[in-house]
Image (tube, rainbow, N blue to C red):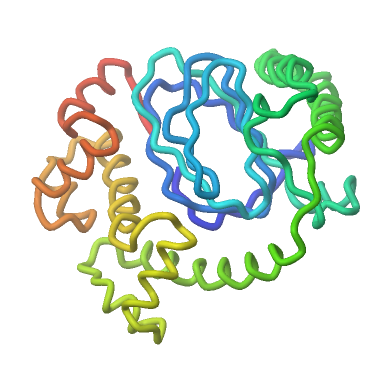
Length: 286
């Protein structure tokens, strides 16, 4: 999955977009944001290194995370054979239609930390959503999935929403607009040699201010984030082609094989070659 500022559109027959994650292998997702509200439900296994607005979470079976609209988040998952999870994206237009004051609200992130909520009911609904989506009965399934979505949204607003601080909106709009431009430029030139000074100059900023700004809002340094962009590209080539490690490293902007291997091991806890072999043994593609 490759995105930074992601545009979320609803599926054809239901008012949300959803993804069921079943592969034991998963590419790292660098920090990004989208206007849609996202629910992440871990049905089995676990999700490690789930970053949301400055905090890191690890989920286990039954856990539910909420990613608020425009919250910066990322996932750096480890290989896990039994993992199964659900992501549901509520388009902001859908939220505005059914929750008129949505701009004034934000949702609690890790639902099991909230006392007196409706966690077990939400778990049942999201479990049913997965089962129904895999049933194959497209006509009735769309109706049932839509009903579940409205039940989930009702419980989230009733039990897990809080009033948003008034200053949050202005700050968010201002820094996300600039970050969108910066990261688009980095994604376009990831294969080239990009220095912090070059990036800062392109946006008419001093290197010092640019570095502080980026670290403050993204949680990574500029070069750390650039490495993650390159790593995402490299992961796709590693799992979907037979290109050599040297070719992948060079084409994705790493200065050499050693640099690529170092970054890869930091995220995936094994060398690229070992990861590729393990993935092929499970017939994985990305």
